[in-house]
Amino acid sequence: MMSLWPQDTIARRFALTIMAAVTVAATLSALAVSLAGSWLSSPANEAGLFQAVTSISHAIDVAPPEMRPALARAASTKLYEVDWYDAASPLAVALDRESGPEDIHPLPSPWLEALGRRALVFTATAADASRMGLRADMETHPRPRFLGVPLKDGSWLVYMARDWSRDLVRLSRIAIILVLLLLSAAAVSLIAARQLSRPIERIAAAARQFGTDPKAPPISESGPRELRGVIRAFNDMQGQIQKFVGYRTAMLAAISHDLRTPLTRMRLRGEFVEDPVQQARLFRDVDEMQAMVDGALAFFRDDADEEAVTAFDLAGLLITIADEFADQGITIPYAGPPHAVYRGRPFALKRAFTNLVENAVRHATPPTVTLEEVPAHNGTGQDAGGMLAITVRDDGPGIPDDALDQVFSPFFRLDRSRNRVTGGVGLGLTAALAIIRAHGGDIVLANRPGGGLDARVTLPVT
Image (cartoon, rainbow, N blue to C red):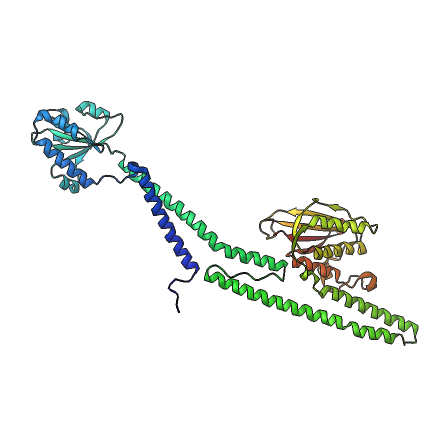
């Protein structure tokens, strides 16, 4: 059954946003006009104005000359001022000749028809008013507009427009309406954009969380139909990746665990080897394989993924690692802030940094550990919040340039002659890189020009 209400889509939200913006703008404009009163009231209808002028002109035309000045003053309103000039006055003579005042011309025909008689429109300067005896307040209205209407006896009625700012009021009305339209459209658009961007922000936050926590919960489906489809696809992808990772880890852990049984049988059968040299070699191979199996089990048992993500003091964690090595008589200097709050898996990160420090202690010199905050937008592609950079720096011989990336490969060792029990099985750096990348960071090894190796770990601050 089809719903009578349209589905929540991005197009529908855009349409509603536009409709809401226009509605709010119209409401605010009407409210502003009603509250502003006459200042923003609509200008008088000009056709009605000329009808009033016609009535006044007819009434004064039939009145005795001695009453006309008083009637003209009585007919004045807030829109115009009326004055009467007899036929012999300089202004009446000038108007009869249609010359003298500045910018004098007949009234346009549409308004002439509304007025019903001849009329002239003109402006005047203070000099014109003085010369022609025009009675007008030129100080209040420096360049007023006039309408001259002749009477039957040759005298003239002159209307001076007091609504001289009518055009300015029109412009003010338009400007205010435009400002209200822009402000309301901006406000409504910001609110609508915020509502639309929230699901997108949640998708981005979930993607970052999934990068640091493979067991992160799925996103709740909300928002427009298109974004709900994106969220549904992301949740499906996240579920498939979680199943794949879980299956792969369980399979590799099972293989490593099952290797213990044949290794135990090989050691037992080695007890029956009579040649002591061959027996020692066999036991050494068994011990080497046992170390590799134990290392692989430690790598695949997925302890880090089981650990909850929490906020902790990363600087305190690094200082703790340095203190633990100090208990063994190994001095690990630390340089950086005393506190740095980071959100991640503290035990997994401790294992990763411990592996880096142990690698330096074992194969080079006791390193220096530094912690620094890298500002945002530094070319690394990270967003606001920046990154935390941890550098483990030793003064050893370094690593050949062609092996800087290979040392992260499982079971890779530079010195293949070292005993695997004392020199490791080659999974320390692999485990460290896996932990750091599970937090959305990376490890980069670089030889220093003066000698030594820098292991730089970058962790995004979310």
